[in-house]
Image (cartoon, rainbow, N blue to C red; front, side, top):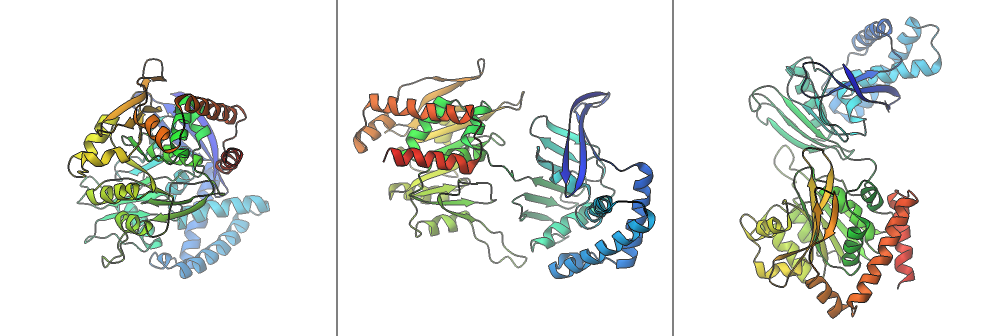
Length: 477
C-alpha cells in the first residue's frame, strides 16, 4: 500500500482523517476516511449507547420528515445520548461528551457516513451505485476514487433517498423511482430505485462549492492567463454578451462565477440557475433566481424559460443563465440581447465552432443571422489525462455568424497564445464606444496589471475583489 495524500477536516464537530492510497489489486486509488480520536473499544461502547438511545427515544423514520417533530426527536436523542455517555464514560470531559454526542447524532439522524463525505470540501461528487460496491467520490485533486464506505443494504440506500426527499418536500417510491432535487446547501441530489437502476438503488450528490471561485483563483490555478482574462474583462466592461462553452466538468460555472467579478456596481444583475452555484460580490445589485421542480402532484414547476421571460420585466442590465438547452430558452436569450441586455450563459460544446453548430442546429436552431448579437465565446476544457481545467479558446463571433478564435490553448506548453486578430469586437468598440485599437491595447494592459496584482497579493475573496473592481470603474468613470 502506497500513501498518495492525506489531510484532516471536521464534520459537525467530528474530526475526520482522510488518506488517499494505492493498493495492490486496485486499479483506482482508495479514499480511506476514518473518524479520529475514537478507539475500537470506544466505538463499540458508543454503538451500544446508540442502540439504547434509539430504543428509549423510539425514533420513527416517518417523523424525521416532519421538521417540528424532527427537532423534538433530535433534542430528546441528544439529551438521552449525553446521559448514557456520562454513564458509560464517567471520566469524559465536557468536550469529549459533546464530540461523542455529535458523532452519534450524525450517525443516527443524519445520512451517516454520507454526511462525513458531504463535509469534505475537496470532494465534488459523491455516488452510491448500490449496496454491493463501495461509495465512489470525485476528488478535486485525484479524480474518481473508491472509498472505504460500504452501505449495508438496498433498504438503507432507499431510506437515505427518502430522508433527503422528505427534507425538501419531494418523494421517491415504486411509482416515482426517480428523484432530482436541490438541498438547502445548494447541493444537487439525483436518486434512482431498483429496478430502474437494475444493479441497485443509486444516489448522486453534486456538491455546491462553499468558497466561490474568483478571477484571481482561476488565474493562479493556471486555468486562464491574465492577458486572456483582461480581454474578456474588456468585453464585459462594455456590455458585450458572451457564452461560456465546454464539456461536462470543464469548469463552465466556475468560469462564469469568476467573470462575474467584472460587473460594475451601478447595474442590475439577474441570475437564473437550476442549482444555486453563483456567488457574486456583495456590493453588486444582484437578484439570484432558481428554477423549481414540480411537487408530488406535478404542480408548481418554475422552469428556466419561465424565469428568463419574467426577468425581462425586471429591468435587468445583465442576465446570467445557468445553461441553454432548448430552442425556446435560446430564442428568449437572443431576444434579450437584441433588446439591449447583456447576457451570459453556459452551453455544452467543445470548441467555438461546435458552439455555433449547436446553436444553429436542432434542438436549439437559432437562425445564424442572429448570432452576431453574441460577441464572445469562452471555451473551457478539461484534460481527461491530468484532470486539469483550462480555458481552451477565447473567440469572437463575426458579422457572418462564424467564430474567429482570438486566443487558443497550446496543449504542449499549457499556455494561451494569440491566434487571430480581432475583427468584430474591435469594430463594435470603435463604433459604439469610440475606442481606437491602440487605446484598447492600453486598456487591456492596465487590466492585466490589476489581475496580476490580485494574484501576487493573494486576494482571492469574491467580495474584496468586487470592491477593487468597483474602485477601478469609479476612477475611470
